[in-house]
Amino acid sequence: MFYDYAKIYVKGGDGGNGVVAFRREKYVPFGGPAGGDGGGGGSVVFVGDEGLRTLVDFKYKQHYKAERGMHGQGKNMHGKTANDMLVRVPVGTIVKDAESEELLGDITTHGQELVVAKGGKGGRGNTSFFSPNNKVPEVAENGEPGQEHWLTLELKLLADVALVGMPNAGKSTIISRISAAKPKIADYPFTTLVPNLGVVALDDGNSFVVADVPGLIKGAHEGAGLGHRFLRHVERCRVILHVLDMSGLEEQKPWEDFAAINEELKLYRSDLAKRPQIIVANKMDMPEAAGNLAILKEKLGDKYEIYLVIALKNEGLMPVIYKAWELIQNTPLPLGIEPTESMRHVIVKAEEPFVIETEEQGVWRVKGEKIERLVAMTDWDNSAAVTRMQRIFDKMGLDQALRLAGVAEGDLVCIGKEKFNFAE
Image 1 (cartoon, rainbow, N blue to C red):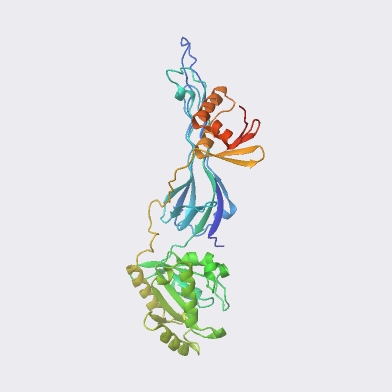
Image 2 (cartoon, rainbow, N blue to C red):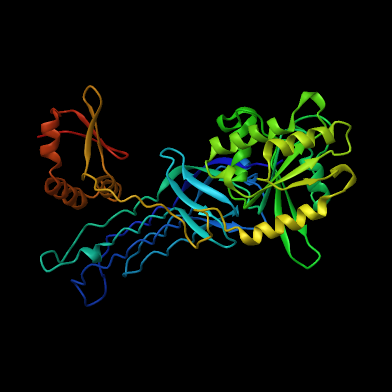
């Protein structure tokens, strides 16, 4: 089964905890701090693999969690950094944040890597807190939590040529004749429910990839007939082979089908209808074909080249193949999808240190990346660490901000996964 959409959960490994330790050696009564730092957590990394063709693997496994870093130890021994989790994805995969829909990356080349969930930093051991004013630090940090979020994966086939047309126009028959692809073929509409890829080999050793996109119908740009699922596979192609059923059966008029499909392409993405198009007039052995061809030429004029074929008998397809190859050589990749080592949209924005929101009567939530990270890395069972965190709260102005927001004595204040009762 062909899967071109998936929703998965990824989490980078948490950093290892730092440790509070002191040197305890014979004849060294005051050896000083010796707590090592924790190791960094592993990241979840997507790797492009040209051997994969669908997202089916993500149907059976939807949660991906990297390992956490090792904890620090005494004698200044630092914890080991965890290995990254490498997840193979098909070339042509677009990765988005499921909640914000922010584009995180576009996997366009084999071996391209994209970090989708960064591992947390290791917490510092008490050796890192040594200073002339604090020669016996009794505080250490917990490891930083790894990034976690839900992602949506969309696969857009990387094909040079897209076969488009109304249902039952003969696209599957054509791809089966010009390549080794073996799609399901029958004489009724919507035989093809998933895109098919085929490699067309030319006599001179060159080749190109063609995608048989399932039949489009009116309203496809709005999702009719799974239009969105189909149309996105046309986005990356350089050339469009527009297959028309010239038989005139079921009262279909080829010129109206041609106009309808191009309108759907235009409404879905404005530049699609402007891509180089070759009109493949199929089923030219049918009685009504010659009359329909005359009307089609009258309607279109000299704007497009029309190739007459009988796909079922493998007649007239070779000129189409070589014309497509010629156009491929003279047509650059569509704007915005040139392969790069890393494609990532970074949004830079100034954020407040924290934001205070009310969840319900007497319950408040403090949000902010920095403050939530600091709270998560604090060992709340360590009195020295708690005192240090309180000093940080004071410097950030948290207590004053809570009072101004209306927080009263005894109210519950939530920061990340921690909950506190507010007290003067």
